Amino acid sequence: MADATVIDDKYIVFELDDEEYAIPVKSVGSIERILPITRVPSTPSYVKGVINLRGVVTPVIDLKEKFKNNPIDFDEQTRIIIVNIEDITVGFIVDSANDVIDINKDQIEPSPETIDTEVTEFIDGVVKMNKRLFILLDLNKVIVDEEIEEMKTMD
Image 1 (cartoon, rainbow, N blue to C red):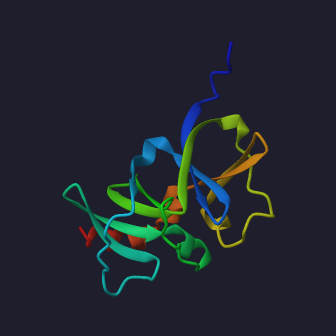
Image 2 (cartoon, rainbow, N blue to C red):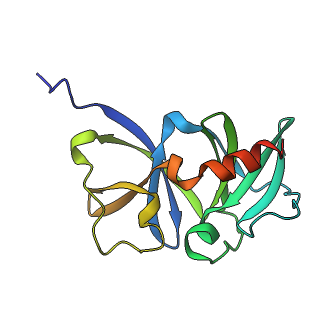
């Protein structure tokens, strides 16, 4: 019989600069191709603007630029992952969204020292699986309270 404390969670896997990141499926609303983005003045450069997603104005953040100060070059693989954090919806621009994986809580390890220092503050842990390393993001750390308040004014 399985350990009752082990909970399987599904995660969406996406790439930034050939590193694989994962966020919980339960936080993801949809994955979209790049849509026209309307720039919003007086926002940080990683806040690319807003999109009109099926009638809902949604702020969009370039995760690579936020983490590494290196904006994403859009191509056919570029995606916007629509996530729900607290009571806002926001889009994360990523290099590509690959697949969905199952992760058991006991597979999650603390983040090793070798992970980029630019992203360590956003990491919830790492998972090694089939010779791949997945960096699990804590969405509540990726978007901080001040940014949430600012984004609420965009819709």
